[in-house]
Image (tube, rainbow, N blue to C red; front, side):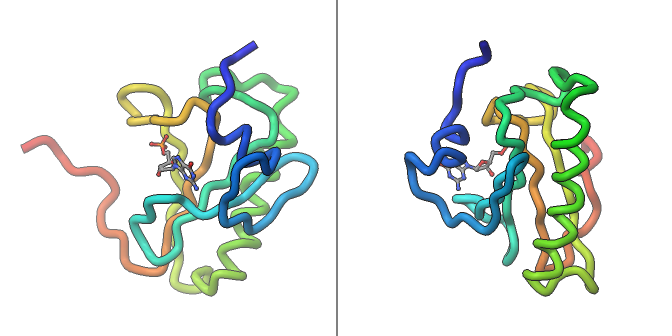
Length: 118
Ligand code: DGP
């Protein structure tokens, strides 16, 4: 079994978060360290450490993450201007919490995606 992270305790509501949405497959809460006016995390309820660990049986949860992103973006009022969805994976992706999560970021122009090396 993969090791639980703080996100498992947020999903089970053992520790508080600014919870926006929860269903049988995913949980959505505001990032504790937002980089934009809207910065929420969309997390599968099942503990899957990284994108490299997904299995075909996880496709319903991974698909739900996208449809819920659309719903939350509309509710946050950022759908028309647009936003960015990011899933980091492991060290080079700068993944800090080893429980898959999709960042939904918007509410300002986000600029180019990744800085080129100088
Ligand atoms: P990543 O680098 O993709 O693993 O991003 C992890 C994000 O998780 C980071 O933006 C901060 C957020 N985060 C970490 N711990 C907590 C927490 O306890 N509560 C909330 N709401 N967000 C957290």
